[in-house]
Image (cartoon, rainbow, N blue to C red; front, side, top):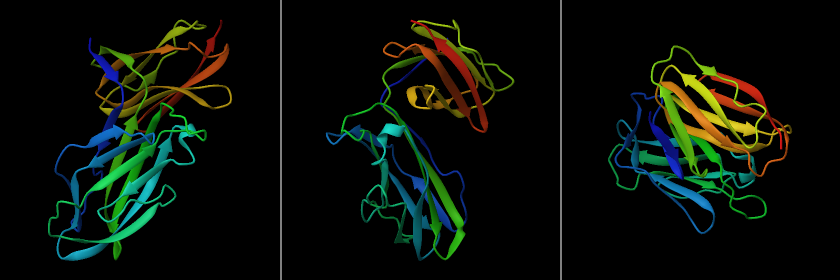
Length: 247
């Protein structure tokens, strides 16, 4: 059985869709760090270029899925010209088909709450880069980060036929319980716990997993007795179940 550990981890899924008129080429590993300003900062070393000549390319943030307490600062994007404030979702710049070392994209997740306190959590940002004169020509790049504390994920089996989310056991529990789930193919998986008010209280999994059945440990130390929900998202599959903490 394999043991996967997630801590200050960064996951990047590059270019979902490519076209003949626009390319995004990754030329090196992403770098990431948590700064003194409580920002999770990363740079993807890659080139964004039209196939020939030069063209205006528009960057659009189409997804911003963050730990709720990270708002209102949220996330921010940078192109080779500038870094933009979190509220800026669209920027346009002129790019050439000639390779330049500074044609990079970078991303910033602000991991602090309204009281300026660092909060562990997870973030997902998707950037769509499209030709201004022909928006049907585009590429997409996903940036993900996870600053959750160390969590053990145990792979039970590598052969499964369908998506599933099992009832946690034991249930009721105090304070530890286990949650099993299965994915029939490699997917980006999110397993999160919420209280009765819909507030996120824990991120158990937030990353790319290969096909298999997995077991996640949840420790509810510090939480009050009551009913909680846990939600699994893997590709288009979504399932939610209840569990009860009794102290």
